[in-house]
Image (cartoon, helix red, strand yellow):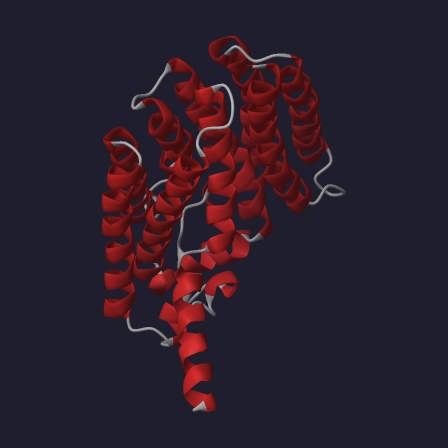
Length: 295
């Protein structure tokens, strides 16, 4: 009996791991503040919970299908060799079915509990990630993460639409923030695990164009990111809480990118990667606080 419970728990953990919970948590950090800005205050708690649940299921479905499709290259890369679809702990057909079911349930649930626009935008993010990034771009072009990274920018659109039923210019600027944040964030990681991508035959920018060019592109995108974040101020009628956070954290982002570009021998790329995670969370939390406190 104890063995059966242990085996069941292990199976559940394996399926949950396919959804990449850490990535999902970051996506949700961009969803709830967008809802607060759209509402100019805290929306109904039920609406927030419904949007978060639906977004979690949708992102989990996308990530699971990604694991299913990429299981061949995951077996080559050290970072992903322990994924359940690689080790055989989950059958490929079962993993694919699980991902599809999550996506369908997410769409139906969000349609029933939020708005059709939010459900469609969440589904669009899933389809973009699976078909555009995973199946088309990732193995074909070093610009994979630039274009494909748009998939991760759908959550604030869905969050905004859950409140208003449509998408405004402010929501599009939030989309742009994540779109321009993704390349420096992901390329910093790619510099760290460049050998894995090379061995797996994935044309990430450091593999195809070299480290120096990648560091330059990281700096360029980091610099472009700052004015885009500031554009959200007038677009969403935000005040000093947001502006102060966006300026300080943005300049620090550019500084880390500049250090990586000028002094790569003493600046590990993982430093920028870790900071980029904190940066995105702080920017979105600041916009939510600004809208809730300053109104």
